[in-house]
Image 1 (cartoon, rainbow, N blue to C red):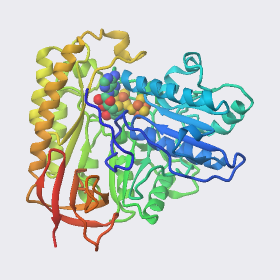
Image 2 (cartoon, protein in one colour; image 1 turned 90 degrees about the horizontal axis):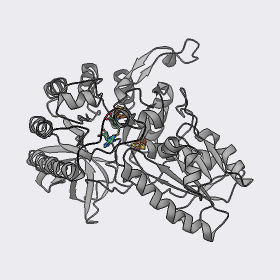
Image 3 (tube, protein in one colour; image 1 turned 45 degrees about the horizontal axis):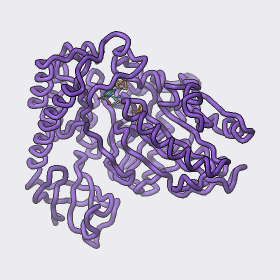
Image 4 (cartoon, rainbow, N blue to C red; image 1 turned 60 degrees about the vertical axis):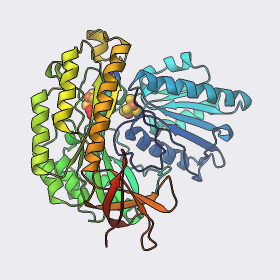
Length: 484
Ligand code: SAH
Ligand code: SF4
Ligand code: F3S
């Protein structure tokens, strides 16, 4: 099974994926009532979860907690969890065993489970995992002061209420493990789509959009603090919709605003700020968004457009509400309006009743689409989802694995081919640090979200833009030199 494990310092974390990522908090000192207590927080899952951990760190900082990177010395250990696939949950349970061992040596330690697994399992978690003291769903982080007080009194605490309004708009995130250049900015929460395989609508609740003023303010502040790239986050960014409030004191809040409008506002903050967004649903991405991308150079030419399957019948079972033909039309329009646009995707392999022919349909769609990058997953049945209720998870594991390997091979070849097409071109690269392999090289990203490595030049530092002439490539990286 294809899984990436990415260091949080890697700025490629621009999509809503990857339950394998794991993070630790930077040192942050708080001044509240619990001054001197230490918090350790570790995150799994998508970028949204990592972004939520920054909200949690901010609330805990307000209570006086300082963060530590050593869970063994923490007073509170939080694990922000993901439920998207069975193995994501398994990883969390294994980690909880390790935290439990530390707690047995340090009885005062409080262990809290946050995020999607907390929401999915609710108080059952306390029954299943005896060492867990707190279970907190993604919409309940404001309740942390009460929950901490409860556990201080020796009680176990649960809050898994989902909200129709919560966006944490007024909470200024504490940037954890940031490179100081790229940041995630959450613009909406929840999901109203009911893809039959997906647990997110159950763990994250209904869709709601954050007020545009607070988004613009947060991004402006990031820019003033030296950040040069933001990724606007939502499970389905294209359905961002600020409805406008009748009694708003600020005019910006009284008017309705859609995603295209928000993108434009963020892009106008400063031309030196790169803007990305994730994730787009193929049924919702509008031509208006594509025109806005074209209008502003600083909106990166990269769209993450999860297809899931190349078969219209499977897509229907998945309740994706588009067909193979619809997806191809969206791709064609993207390539027509933005010829230089990179497109990445997600693919689920071995969904209920997927035939050999339908698997071939996915492979042929990949041939057509020429995705620059893809996240590929074998189907994992999630309890409570529509698919779990309606369909049998009937593709044998060995067939799923074989199909997965065929899809993986095709994508690896395609990604390499796509990279080779950049050789000889010059790309504007935002430097995000030194290359992992050599302190003599800088590493950065092209607007297509491709890593570009080139020799360090003293005139440039991380956070600067530089034109790089691409000379070569490996299967995952472009290699070049500064183009004067
Ligand atoms: N909102 C995003 C998806 C978030 S989940 C979107 O609609 O694109 C990220 C990816 O995980 C999905 O795109 C899908 O490919 C994969 N995924 C979700 N549920 C899954 C499951 N039950 N089994 C395997 N993969 C799954
Ligand atoms: Fe899940 Fe579908 Fe919503 Fe994405 S759009 S989070 S796959 S239900
Ligand atoms: Fe994200 Fe995993 Fe939840 S992908 S929304 S953390 S189930």
